[in-house]
Length: 203
Image (cartoon, rainbow, N blue to C red; front, side, top):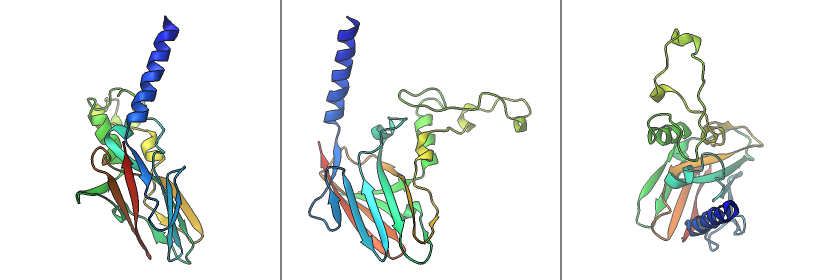
């Protein structure tokens, strides 16, 4: 009976996963398109940007329920540093709705806030320091002030400056934008690089 239950749960998970909308690169756009890996790579002014979809497979899995994460790999082949800021990334849907990139600490705060400021959220792993740190003078820190530690920040694309002949990698998060419509355009503006990455929403 237990094995039958496990098979049923496994089948349900597969069904839910297969029904979830997916972002697929539009093959007719410029750049190098890798449909099997969902990667689009474009280069301008000695800056190369690769964007991959569907790669958030980490805890908390609920990130995919509320946000649209893109995995970036940015290579700087110029002779000077290239600054990266979240304002460099903007997402648009076909109806002209604009989605700003959300800093990772904002994602963590919103997800924790949905569950009473710090209680365990299904599918999430947030760890807090169990002992009272010395600067609290022995008083308990209110749960809404405790800073969550999770993969969201650890795996995020950092706001930094890429040194010459170096690269950075990480996730950029947007409010969920794949529920409706047929496509999205991701605009990236860096020093000497301006382009749009086009994706089709497959349901």
